[in-house]
Length: 265
Image (cartoon, rainbow, N blue to C red; front, side, top):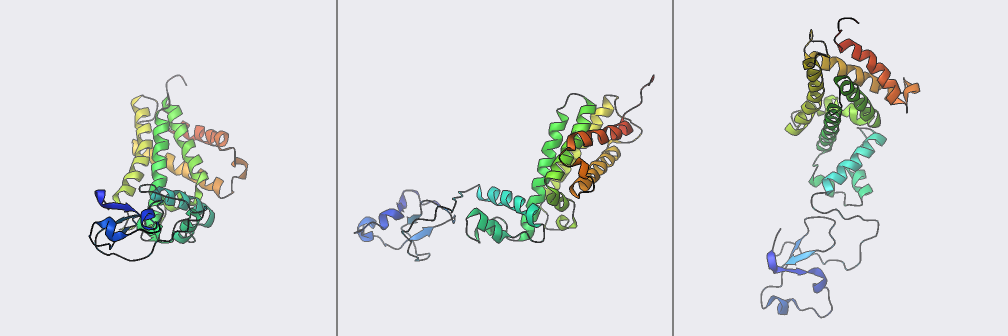
């Protein structure tokens, strides 16, 4: 809310000997608390109609309570939820735990995520957005082969770093009518990034053209997704912590399946 110059600081009201009638110039001393955020350093009061008449406490907040201003509480909730998701799993993720860890009221995260489902959908969108960024990074590589291999390597590293979130991204949980368009767009952007890499390789005469780019992209995506799942699940313990070399070896085999054979080879 904006009250322009009609704002007075709560510290002034709490000063000894403060007279609201005098300060109001004869106007009503009834006030409306503007507490848009649970965590503000300064609370302002407007000399308007009564909304509620809680007396503000003069005692300072505990040092452990952090202050999140407009625009960054949602990001803070998402980042903390992302961390807790890997620790506790999808079923045990709690908005209450997120709020407690951030030092905000239990009700604060619900302003951005009214339901747990809304939080899960946002986490899946976050994952696809990061994957889309990874595909863009891979596309910036010099050659079609480097782009293809880097796309697979970055996919695996991202999935291994966030195994539970990756599970969420491809689960039935997010396949619902409540899923926002932005989630679908993030997923399409990520997949289209790989399709573009393959299309570029085909145009350059480096990749096979007997299959369309979409089919080759699905094959490559399935392969690296499976590799990431095996590493995360512990079935490929020898690859843990050594994803670069291991995955590049596998991707070299995969690349031979999409590479166009040239005469003389």
